[in-house]
Amino acid sequence: MPFNLHPTVTIQAALRQATAFLDKQDVADSRLAVEWLLSHALDCARLELHLRRNTALPPDICRLLDSQVNRLATNEPLQYVQGETEFMGHVFITDRRALIPRPETEQLVESVLACDALWKTPAAIADVGTGSGCIVVSLALARPAENYYALDIAPATLDLARENAGRHGIRDRIRFTQGILLDSLPPASLDAVVSNPPYVRTGDWAELPPMIRNYEPRLALDGGPDGLAIVQPLITQARRTLKPGGRLFLEIGDGQAEAIAGLLNGNGFVDIAMRKDLAGKIRIATARLPIDVN
Image 1 (tube, one colour):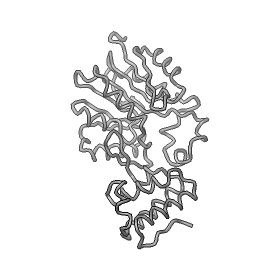
Image 2 (spheres, one colour):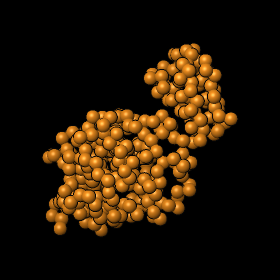
Image 3 (tube, helix red, strand yellow):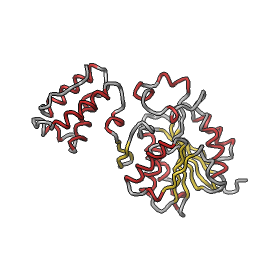
Image 4 (tube, one colour):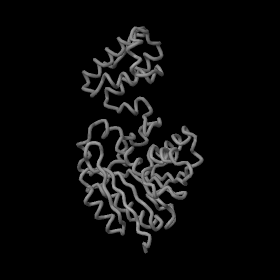
């Protein structure tokens, strides 16, 4: 039976009933998820729900919560159900056209922003596989004077990135291009390439949690048999597209550091470095082309 609130119910009762329903469906962190949905629907802080616990929910909010809770019960991610998520302190439209922005990718953006040498003169920066646009939009908001490119193979995904850039008032400052990796850009035209490419091994796909496997786009996750089917040509193309001294910033999969360091070294990159995420796993790779690259 689907979840269905009584049309006149208090916030406290709605929280209790929705949480109990989701618990029966083995949905993780059910109480927290319902609190986020209700606080978003009521446009209030999550902690404020307790203060308003005896307030009756309007019928339209009851209907909305019914729909959203039933979506959560199928393991649809909260970020898709809610329709937005926070990344680098900014709120992004989030739906099934692109991956859900994650904390590991925030660390990728932080690595780019922390590279002082990149920002000494106006830089040309490409976000490859831009997805929701969370990387390029966050960079453009933090460093507005640069030239930005958002590249993606999927037209619908690129539309989402445009929507997010428009939401933050910077759509005209980013060039959106559909294509394969860096094919659309001329040689030696970029100061930096940043990407969160597909890196999940195909054999590991079936082991991903249902909320990822059944909802997030496989095109943005499946990196082929070894997880490097996209990373390898991306590194090769970055060598061609970066200016001498240009920099590459990649989010990578757990256990891929050695292989990716080999690919970077084989393509002439120097200053190869790896950074661990908050869980202690190596997830960020950075490298630079030498100034005298041939």
